[in-house]
Image 1 (cartoon, one colour):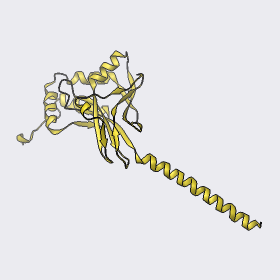
Image 2: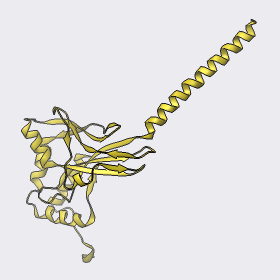
Image 3: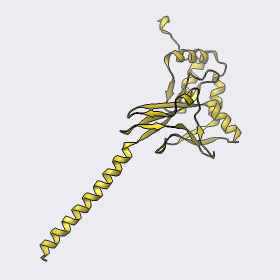
Image 4: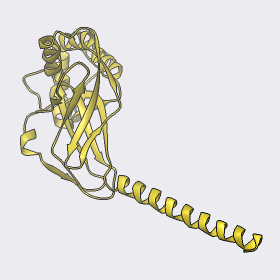
Length: 207
């Protein structure tokens, strides 16, 4: 066989091999994107909690794929705890399992009081890392890590407890919807401004 023919044959084989490898990579990528749940954690206020402060850690799950997924449960993985902390907010048992179409979002929350009690019963002190998760039949999807400072959380709950301005704000938010912020520092500064009277609550009837 002539050298030119050998080179041509090698080029063809190499090209076919590359095509097969590329096809496999594309198939894997498409399979991963078919079901893709994006989970995120945010701090905020959940006005459905009437007997507690309402300060919560929100868990958001968004179907970022192009096929439906079914959420069976959601919650937190807390560093140092053997098992997950399942979100069991009011009425959540009536929501799950929940089918999410592409682009749909599900949210639930865990109250600050539950987090504080969990840390106390486990003799945790200081800081811990937490991850939000959403469980589906195809596997578990997790958020990025969030640092939880239990002492700061205890101080924030104590700050708003029995505070008239915060109670008024929470009642106001009940008609407006819940609140979520990117970081704990954001919600901490926001609630401090409310307690100190830096934030004025103006209802539509007063304008």
